[in-house]
View: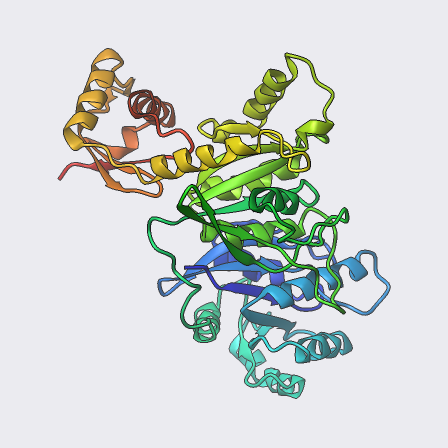
Length: 436
């Protein structure tokens, strides 16, 4: 099921980042008492009453001539267009401002449900002043205080009421769903076209032209796949930035619906920081991953070039050490045939189950050869291991004290499981639990 998207919008300095951090439970956004300091949309996940959702902190909307405000307005418009529910944030200290009214005009054009929040209502006496906000035309204003955490439960109660009912089409279990993620202009659309053998997806040299998610059924040797691509031109009249930031939200939606995620890198340009950020979302979501180096035809190379590039990928993507790497060219279709077998392998390992007795033989042998180090006289003891889930493969390790399971030893156990059973292309999770 795809998580609903909530966008927090409003003029600068009304406390959007503070509320965002309260909802996600950590300091993700920059918080500073200067209008316009949050310059980029920030994405994270939240949960309320067992309802999970993605949340966007926008940089605010204004009509003045402050630095960055044009860009911030564009970012907020994108977030509004992407969201299932909008939290329109205002400030009870300043009351209704002309900037609030301008934000409201933008929101009037959206068919997305809007929940009006009045922030900085830090004491009961201030509640009497919020009724002016009815004039904005979005129903009952909800008083909240980001600094004190007051009223957030009521706000989220109202937000989840507007979440869309139902989900996106479910496919049969044996159909592999894979998506292509990566920053703009790495050749994702060209790669889809090369796989399909037709101009199914619009291809442009302008970064950021891919717009709406499209599912394409694809059959190879009688086996059915679904390609989840963010294909389609931008909506007319809309302003979308062509920077790498925009690709993140598109990637999040595609990742959630995928079994396998292809992380596409531009072989001609090399690796940049944004590649790692986007790939990190696939890893954190527990999806199978295949690294795809596209535009390999444009790279000047000798017999060492591929090995050197692979070493660079391993150095930069340490958290994806399990992901296979495919070098190809969507333009010339060189090595394109190597991609589907890798997708099949990653998907199979992502769904793989290991027999409990065999798994315990491997773990106990590993522990006998390399016992856990002691901590202040206490030593980790492992009693039993069992696999509890797939997609990704998840293992519960029953121990005497979960606090004694150090990250390095957990990594050691994971490596032993991989040595014994492979699991190439998929992350695996280990959960330490006390034996009752």
